[in-house]
Structure formats: C-alpha cells, structure tokens
Image (cartoon, rainbow, N blue to C red; front, side, top):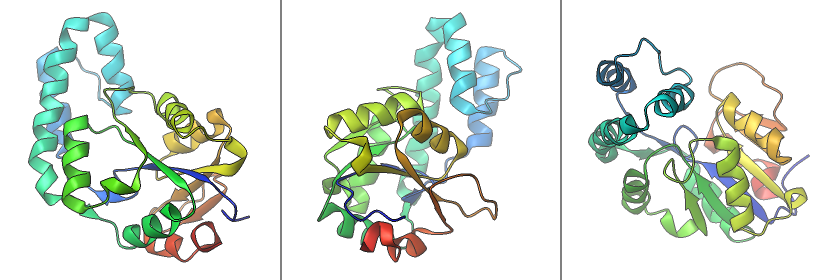
Length: 200
C-alpha cells in the first residue's frame, strides 16, 4: 500500500525531516537540578508534564531552559537527505502540516533557515500541545483532512501510537534496524523519497 491519492500529509520535524543536535543530556540534568526531581525525563515530555501538574510555577523556568538549549542548536540544524525531494513532490499534490516538540521560536527559525517553511499549511509546536496525539489531531483538523486520505510521517514509537489513536496511516522513518508495526518503514528520507507514498 502506498500513498497514491493521499491529499493530506502531516510530518514530524526533528529526527524525520531534520537533524537538530540539542544537548538533551544537559537539558535533562539542568531540569533535574531546577526542579529537584530524580525523574529521568524519558519519555521527556511525559515527565515534564508530571512535574508541571504538581507545580505549575515551574513551567516557565523549564520551558526557558529548553528554549536556550534549542537556540544553541538551531545553527547546526540540517535537512535529512531526501527531505527536500519529499516535500517538493508531496506539496504538489497534497496539503501538508508539521508537528514538533520543539518550541515555536526554534521551529520558525529552523524552517526559515532551511527554506522549507512554505511547504506547510500549518505547524504545531509544544506551545500548542505536549501530547503528540493531540498535535496530530489538531494538524489534521487544520487541513480539514479526511483521515482515509491522509498519512503521518514520523520516526518514533510515540508517533506510531499517535497515528493509531488518530486513525491515520503511519509511515516510519526508522534508522534503527527494527520493525515496529507501521504501515511502511523506510530507513532514510532518501529511501522514502523514491517510495510509492511519494511517487505514487
């Protein structure tokens, strides 16, 4: 099964379309110090939300910490090989949206620097939601998408679970040599670019 006839596509950003070298180990250590917690922030935003639910005043300082580390990484952001080909091909026949757990400022700067912002009709960051399923559903709603004519492209098990919860097909860009139950798995964006999901 390919993507022939798909009219709506939602992309995850980091790890799927781009590489962004945020020093997450340092972020985790800083957040543990800031919040006095032993939580490992893995999954990152699940632990993040657990802390904020207990002490909402920590939201601002925690978000600023992540923003600072993301800002440092933005100049090193790089498109994955094949990403431009994928976006060019799909944007000619489908409406595209973007979801990311990066902050809005970092997201906007990255899309502008890499010249791909114009490919997306909408974009949703962690300021909109820290839940990937909610982000995906909001993205699909923004496109006024029929889920039967849509698919989601991501790289993580959390993306797969979100796609299943939203009732949409899922294409996984998975460098790790395992085989989660996605509708299709490609080991790189370049491989995906040559697939029926893009060419069909």
